[in-house]
Image (tube, rainbow, N blue to C red; front, top):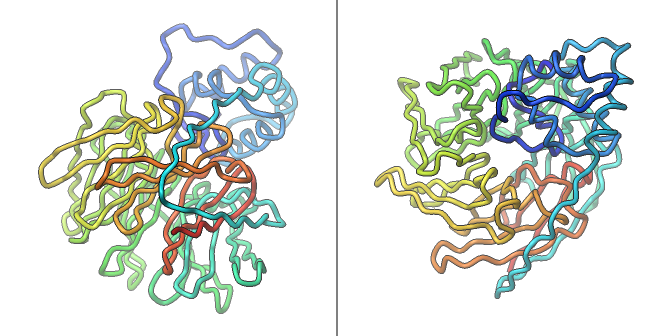
Amino acid sequence: MRSAPAVLLTASVTFLAPVANGQTLPNGAAREVIQSVCSACHQLNVVTNAGHTPEEWTRIVGDMVMKGATLKSTQVPAVMQYLASNFPPKTRPQGAVVTGSAQASFSEWLIPSRPFPHDPYAAADGSLWYTGMGGNLLGRLDPKTGQFKEYPVKTASSGPHGLTGDRQGNIWFTANYRGYIGKLDPKTGQITEYKVPGGRDPHTPIFDQQGILWFTVQGGNLIGRLDPATGEVKTVPVPTQGALPYGMVVNSKGVPFFAEFGSNKLGSIDPKTMQITEYPLPNRNAQPRRIAITSNDVIWYGDYGRGYLGSFDPKTGKVREWKSPAGQDSEPYGITALNDVIWYSESGVSPNTLVRFDPKTEKFQTWKIPSGGGVVRNMMPTPDGKLVLAESGENKIALVELK
């Protein structure tokens, strides 16, 4: 199906390495359709290694059609039946329970519209925001009252994905399906759109210290910058083809770093020249997805494919790795740093876990997410030292108080 290369990322589909030549689909009425349509943009193992409920397959196929899949409406019922029959949900392993001295308590809110929240954002006023990727909206939660307010975006099927905010209180998002960066003024509800040249699926946005917005473009294989003062948008290609630039952070010197989910590399971009430097990780099978950064400018990444937490020091080039508590199938995903302690979620286990790693002691601690998590794709600290999580499959927002 026509989509970003090797991605079915709007639901919990696992990205895997290319399969051997000769990979075929099981016999069935829709086999030839899927073989031709899906393989136009990604390896067939993205389909054959997935496992979902009929409802999840419905959402995934709908997402792919919105991204440009050349699938006729008359073909959809047979495709749905084929996928649900041949690739049902897989049994996920249990997460590892690792005890420790830290305490974490969870508060979770069900989003009434059930819009498949993708990314969270903790605003300075204490409100919690989320992108409703399936509902084509942005949402705001007041955790004190439990009240929600939602803002539909003006372009249909935009697929709001990444989320951040500026110093003026505006909320910025990436329109993953329609190739633009959006800015919402919460006071007026007005949305301004900035088209991304050649960027069909902008992904993760982040502001630097100068107020410039940087972002990854996953399937387009680009890194971009947007100057809010002028509205100018520039993009440059990532040197490695099929790199799938994904998570992004900015270091203390204003240099953006990003993960290459389609390769075993991290990258950085010079904020003045926009020249990209890539840093290969030692293991060729590494798949860094989301990244975090500590006060010493060390980059931390979840190795989604291998089940490791890793660190990379750009000053020395040194890479270190620790096996995630649930091991190879843990699929580390959403990750952040709070007071130089690393927090991330294991999305491959049921229920998802929240994992704490202290770089000073090199010890892990884990908690099972009460609702199950439904794949925590991203998380971030709040201004008062908590964590906010978007629980996509559960259609919930979680706030974690830490002691």
